[in-house]
Image (tube, rainbow, N blue to C red; front, side, top):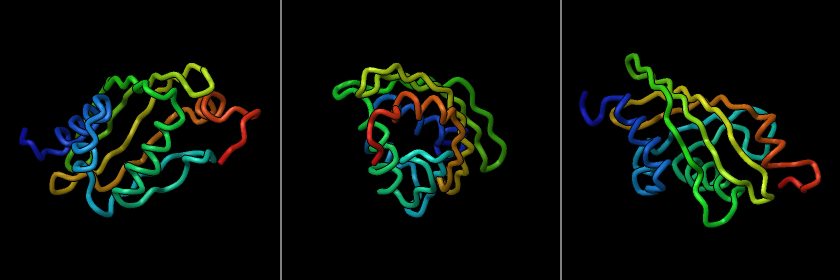
Length: 140
């Protein structure tokens, strides 16, 4: 498998997210990439472009966690066919409000020319809402 093979690109991205390697994270995406996040949470919707994905979506999610701590990401499965890669991972962290965040995620990644061009993520948005956006806290 080459360094730009779709499966390698996605694994490298997930490992960079796990390890907090912001330069590798940014470099993983095409300039006009999109990331779709389900539900009706403040993070939900389609995020377009590297800055929107990295700064607003991923950065916005990180800002919901206890400052100074990392989200523990474990890649649990990767299946690739052509330019499509399906990855499963778990995310664990402590939310700013002290809640235990432990979610299972799946993403369908499309990779072209060594860059991620789109992601459709699936996750338990009810758990995310309960832990990250409890009803007694104002939503942005």
